[in-house]
Length: 440
Ligand SMILES: NC(=O)c1ccc[n+]([C@@H]2O[C@H](COP(=O)([O-])OP(=O)(O)OC[C@H]3O[C@@H](n4cnc5c(N)ncnc54)[C@H](O)[C@@H]3O)[C@@H](O)[C@H]2O)c1
Image (cartoon, rainbow, N blue to C red; front, side, top):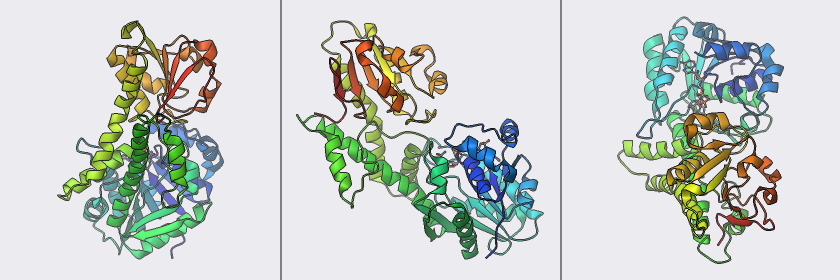
């Protein structure tokens, strides 16, 4: 097996830069490629262009092994394996766009044409099933004039990281999914990860198409589990004395179910779960069949915000003043705690809906204020901190369970305030009316 020492990573975004830094930290010589010159300059000064836990320190520590460039030849000709981690945005039908991927593959193929020796191209970006062999392999062979399996290798190797813990997840995966076009390509990837991982993960080696289906079906299964917990929560709210948290905790103790992702709350959001679920449903349609469960999960997930809105309207129904005179505080705007990302954020959708309902809305998030301002504009008030956000509000929605919200003094904020806790995050507080999603 080839003893790989030099790696290139194409696309230095939220996943690609962490990937490059992790490999560099384990002694590989890494060349990162991006089209964004500002990003390249920052990285070469060991400055991180994105917020991600532990990335700044890792970058500083490993910069001697990492170089960023916009030059594909420099990267491909001076490495043995190239990981492609460019964005594959979702299209209206739920499938993923290959626009950036195809451009990157084209450039890689032009460099491969000039290269002597075997080089492995690895697709890490999330792609629709069949893309690695029908699109990537096709372009690589056509443009380079070389043959997959003889002159170059090819694999699909996606990651299952979560934003906020990308570095930890990358270095400690449960499983490494390797869809190999040739056995030697899988061997090379296994060698790289055995040198990189801090744990001893399971290597799931298979064909590229099986790995492509595994990737989106894994996320699709998690969204189904989350949605089951939320359906349970919806039912429990109608039953006096029932508590979906108590029930889901017990369900999670059964080893057939497991305790991860069975916690009721708001729906899922972010840059991966919603779109992977939709892509699975779309893939089924493209194959002239139906993934009815995935479609239903998406529908139920979208309904979560309406559920919260109904609870808010019901909670304030007895008050005499008009909606336009009532102020609602929304705590949290990101799609989950510890990230500034607002893509498909349920919290942000709640703020939006409350504005459309005619309420006065004030918002606060420890990291996502700037991103939220770009979407919500002048429609809401932006508080300087959590305490200011809730102060004097008629109702507070705890939309994202950021730990710092535990420090809020609700007694100081207003004695008649109602708190709608979407995560069973607060405990009952004297003199404050606490309502929780999932509790009857
Ligand atoms: N972020 C996540 O949590 C996550 C998790 C799992 C999988 N993924 C997948 O990884 C892929 C990348 O996601 P991301 O969140 O890192 O995207 P991102 O948008 O943060 O980064 C993409 C990077 O690619 C660069 N780029 C675009 N075109 C390029 C080209 N032709 N050549 C070189 N660089 C180019 C961009 O400038 C950007 O820096 C996507 O397919 C995504 O679905 C992401």
